[in-house]
Length: 166
Image 1 (cartoon, one colour):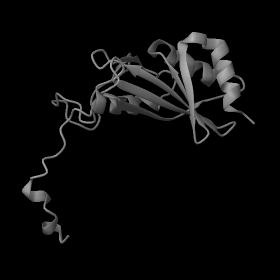
Image 2: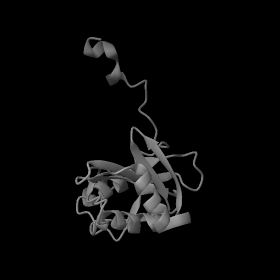
Image 3: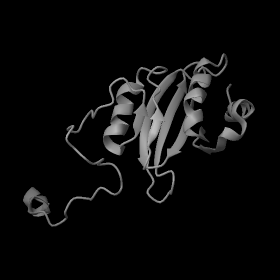
Image 4: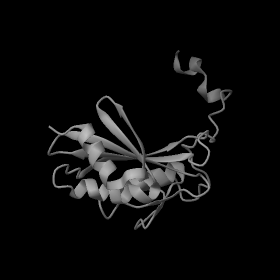
């Protein structure tokens, strides 16, 4: 049975100080690394003869406005079907230069996931074959999932509960 410690030891031997740390929640390990290391690490885990993390479950963008110099994050959720084991690779990028290498060449399913992270957070996936908005209109000049995006106006008349029988 594959263990998180076995994976962590292997990654530390391979990448050393390029790994900023590890966290484990609900038996799923997160590996914190650099933008430059993430793609080679994902390829390494994909091609590893034992680990075989060959399925990209999800790719998500997150906005941490208080994390100066790393306000935007990309989280890669990887799954090894061989061992039924999951792992997350996490990176942080500055909001002023949110450039991250695409992994579409490693995981075709990353195509739409990267477009969604671009559409909602403004993360620029360098080398993506078609990085355009996927759900919002092209004319939008903001990224609605960033925490600086204003919430709805609570005084809107069409949002009164009484209109909906509540």
